Image (cartoon, rainbow, N blue to C red):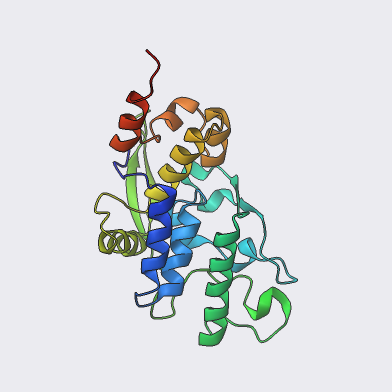
Length: 221
C-alpha cells in the first residue's frame, strides 16, 4: 500500500491556497479536492463530465463511479457535498468553458460535452493512461490502467507546499484519518473508500506525532 502521508485540514487549505500561485491552478485545485473526496488518481483521470454534472448544469452531490473506472472493477459512490470543493470544481468548469475545452455549444451540462473527460492537462487534453500489471493476493496477474502523469502532477503540488511525503493517495488517507479522528465509525469510512474490510481502512489512518503528543499529555492519571 502507498506510504503517502495524511494531511490535516490546515495543511489541505494551505495546499489549495498555494495552488493559486501555480500554472494551471484551476485544474490542479480541482484534482486536489477530487482526491480528498476519496477518488483514486486513475478514477479522477477517467471521470467524465456527465459523472459530475446533471444535464441542467448543477454539480452532483452524489457521484456514482462506474465499475469500469474503479479499482478491481468495483463500482462505488462518493459525495461532493463540501462547499469549498464544489466552489473549486465550478471554478474549473468556468475555466474549461473560457478555454473552450470540450465544449458543445449547447445549454446542457453548462455547455460542456457530457462524454468528455472532466479533467484536462495544461495543454487542454485528457490525461493519458498506461496499462500496468497487478498481482492479486490469489497470485493472479491482472492488467490495470494507471495515470502516472496526473500522479506526478500531484506529487509536485505537494512538494512545492513542503509536503514531500504526500501523493495523490494522500487525499484518501486524509479523508479517512480526519473522519476517524472526528468520531466517524471505521465501517462508514470503509464504505466511502470502497474497502471490503474495515481492516484495510485502519491502515489508512495516519496519526501524526503532534496528535500523539497531545494525546499523551492528557491528565488522566
